[in-house]
Image 1 (tube, rainbow, N blue to C red):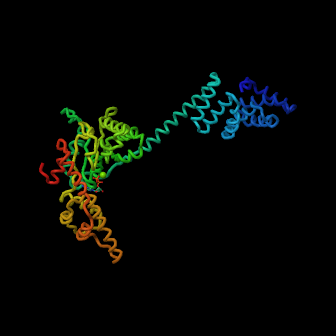
Image 2: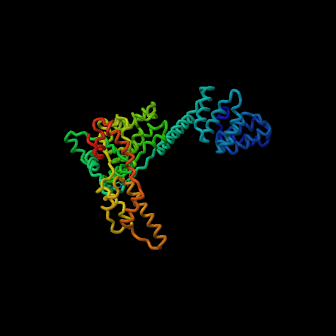
Image 3: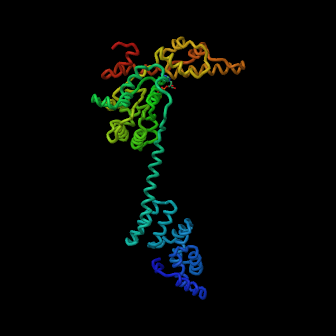
Length: 446
Ligand SMILES: Nc1ncnc2c1ncn2[C@@H]1O[C@H](COP(=O)(O)OP(=O)(O)O)[C@@H](O)[C@H]1O
Ligand SMILES: [Mg+2]
């Protein structure tokens, strides 16, 4: 198109157009005029001229190129692309056609292809570099990458909660609450005091024990207790969802928590990062574990204002590296609730239910070995029965002690199975007394 680029003033153009009226079949003249119009971005007029030329000379490459340029200028992108795809079939393809094709592709949102075509043009003619196009390609590539980043953020988005429960909503477990208070809440609230005594803060608490006994509940309540945000990360979900990309996503989770501090970052099923799991023995698994440890150590970013809690039903599967100082250096047994705790849990759970004169002590006595989840199940059962009754009689009646006790008989405690496994670890793999609390709970003398 270079030969169209001579500067030409408006008067001359008008003179040429008048001349064309007298000799409409003068193709070179029409071509010249079309080129000038195109150069002035009068795309519609230029388009008309190019089309007339192509009617009589369908093979005219310059005019095809001109027409494609007009299409692009008029935002008829797909028409431009169709025409240009044809034009670049020449061997070798014309460099101006390639450049125009690249611009059209870019306009069409095909950045990668646009970039490729541009490179092809440069290879054919290193002097053909088009700075404007180059910049736009770069920008759109960056925007594209940003978008990918954002998508990854979204896929790693673990909900940031603002729990409205606190320690008072957790029945019993006083010793665990105390530990959490001393180890992570007080350091958060009285940082200077700890610093004054030269006491290092940091590290997390690992809660372990049978399922349904309040580990998750307590972690959430910890956040509510100090009005911190709460993020719950199921490691198994992380592994499933992010195969191959877990490290990066893990980092993003920590970063999100750091942006929302104070924040309780809770890792559930943390044994999934176990040294004994076969998928963790492969190097990808090893990398993930190392990434996790680096984040815990706050190697690259500081973990001030992050409260780290973990939970597992199977602490014996966890990689021992997790238990070093500054990591999960407190391991606490969350036992099934004792009788007093069961009373407390039942009270909490029945608070908003239609119940009357419940003998909590009596029900608590009858639910030895029941977890909090078991107690919930009992209440659910009792309520279902009540509902069925209400449909029969037409009169809704409140829950009574005997209803709960009937339901207890229909539900089996779910904690016992866990103890049959845990007992073996406590007896035979109890390095440095790690699982002493289990033995104490089971009344086994060492
Ligand atoms: N000590 C407790 N106080 C109040 N609710 C409890 C307690 N323990 C368990 N629950 C209830 O039982 C259910 C299961 O508890 P969860 O925290 O998910 O158990 P875990 O994480 O130990 O498997 C939850 O709905 C929770 O509200
Ligand atoms: Mg849980």
